[in-house]
Image (cartoon, rainbow, N blue to C red; front, side, top):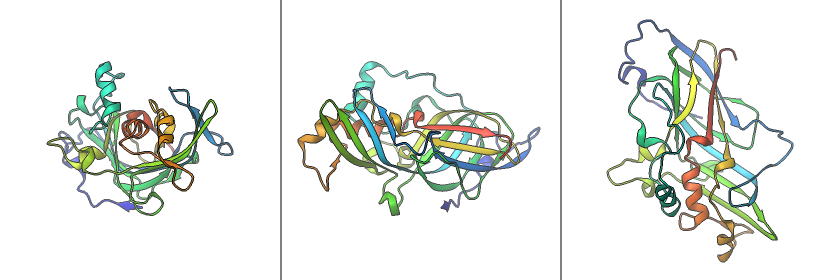
Length: 265
């Protein structure tokens, strides 16, 4: 676990230095995959009719901020923009375009690796802190991590099946300059903003973050991977094929995360 040596953003964000009528609070933080039967594999079907079973789904995330900015309602992109995202991975997090600075009311500065296949919540060392002001959205940052993630921010592996075809696959998301738009920064590429989070931090409560990988491959047709060569029994997707392009966009979608708060641990 890594706790970032960052200044307290509550004091830096507009309006956050004045806590009149509010109380400073500290709270626990827990992270996991979606709630499900851990004895069963995580299987789902994407919008292209592929039945997908994941054998690995790891995400390195942190820091996390709670913000008073309202979430984006639905997908306001035009059909042409959505098609363009599949052809060329977007260089910004889902929902980024509509968001202003808002007001940060709580933060979690620890960076942590989450097994998105594990439903049991685990404690994030250091917890979080802020003020007891209602938030509407969360902002999660992704970061590259060594070890099991091999220098990537997200690593995934599994098998996709449709009709008689079975495609074992693997791939990853690495936060690098290829995701940075003209005039942008690498930090913008790390952010997933606009995650719905209607929560109010309170002393002694618990902020809970769950990672949902089931939408990561919407729009992906795994048949394209079989035109290349498998390596060690798996086909590796990249940003040059439709599976990789779909993944790079969807894994940074606000729908990949659920943020909630319990007033008691």
